[in-house]
Every structure is written in C-alpha cells, then in structure tokens.
Length: 223
Image (cartoon, rainbow, N blue to C red):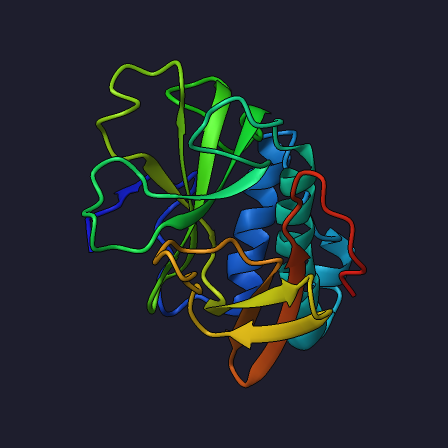
C-alpha cells in the first residue's frame, strides 16, 4: 500500500485516549474550523455523564451524515473519468493492481480540509479504509500543481470504521446482493455499488450505517 500523506487538524491520537477524549478533541477542532458539523457534540452531554455508547452512536451517525451530504452535494460529472457524481477512481501514484476508491468532487472543500491555510475549490475526494487506523478522506484540488501525478493528502475522518461492504442492485431482476469487496463485471471492470455500508466499532460497541451512492438517471427504492 502506498504511504498516505497524512494531514490531521489536531494532535496524533494516542492509544491511551478514551472515546470521550477523542470525540471531545474532534468536536473542539470542528468548532474552531467553523463549518464542520459531523463531529460537533453537546458539551453538556460529554461532560454531564452521557454514556459512551450514546456518544459513539452519535459520532458514527454524524460521520455517515457528513458523507451522505457530501455525496448529494458532489458536482455533476464534467470529467470523463467521473461518469457520475460518485465514481470509482484510482488516485495518482497507485499501482494498476490496486482497487479503485469511491470518489466524489466538491465545489469547495469542507471547513476542516484546508491547505495550507484556506479552503480549496474543485476538490476531488476519495474514501480509503486503512486497517487498524480507520477511515481516511484523501483529497486534492484540480487547481493544484501536480494534480494528475502526486498522491492526494489524507485526513482521518474516524478511527472507528473497521470495515466497508457494498450493496449492488440488479435493476433487471429487482434483487439486491451484498458484497464484501467491490464487484467486477464481465468486462473485468470494477462496478460502482448502489449502497455503501460502514461498520463502526469501539470497545465492544458496534454499529453499521448505510450510505446511498447517487447516480445519474437512476431511480430505485434504496431502503
């Protein structure tokens, strides 16, 4: 696996941190960066004895809501490499043997993605699950020099995602299939799933969330 260019807004997480300390740090960082919403929690709940299970669930659903909103707000396809608002793309620097990543493009980067000190336009983002580290958002702007050659920088979204799975809908037969890996078609090309499943885990707690991947000219009951 290629080395990620890690770009975190806060200090590096230590194993000794409790869940509440991690989430509180993320929450404070989000408040300071003004436009991030998915890590913001009630301070009264954090300090007033809110259960770890409840805070963990709020975190998982907040991350999921952020990603779903990003998918919905992603730009209409302008690049042949991105045939829909959400696509499967390989990042620059990846070998051809590696699987593509779920990718989307935003008109402007979210408030917690700044480089070096400002939000960037036309930001292409990729979801990357790293074993034992969590779910990362890889990102770079089309206006950056080296966009097509240099690996994107990486920001940790959450350390609690341990697995991603994929749902595919068969429009001809009206059936769903659940896959642990991206599926390939008869032509050998990877196929974009209809839904993405994220598994969050922490200290005996587990939660699965579902995200719908928007497509062009597709209408189907997704839940």
